[in-house]
Image (cartoon, rainbow, N blue to C red; front, side):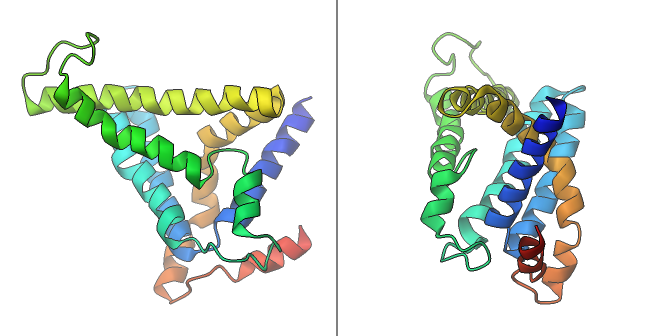
Length: 205
């Protein structure tokens, strides 16, 4: 069972890399995202609110900006797949689902601003610092909720193992992304916009 779990984890991680990380800009942003996520992980033990703010304002924005603005969406000749096909078979959050998640994240401060109690859940904020810490609580809940929602969703549309593997992948992505993409910023500074090694790796996978 453990062997199957690890093999599925390797497969999900490899598919994510080969389908969605061709751009060196995207890879570089993932490197920044991974480093800041590790900082956010450490801050969970000291100040979860700071962790949530860093996680969303730095880690998630750099990570998703790479996908939305820099990753090619034309026909993928390396994997012989259309963008639409990749979006359809995506295990986790494809671009459409990410738009929904990021919209919830972006609108949540507005809801708190209009209703300082957030439907009676909070003591009304009295300063900008109070407001940001309460926003951080909401963002922490959005992050945990988004992770658990898709995990349980995969239980039903795939199977329990797929959901648990995906959750494990998401939680450990910062560690693997540092290893995968630490060379990307240097390659980008040399003018390399697309990872030339990806095709070779796909052919030998």
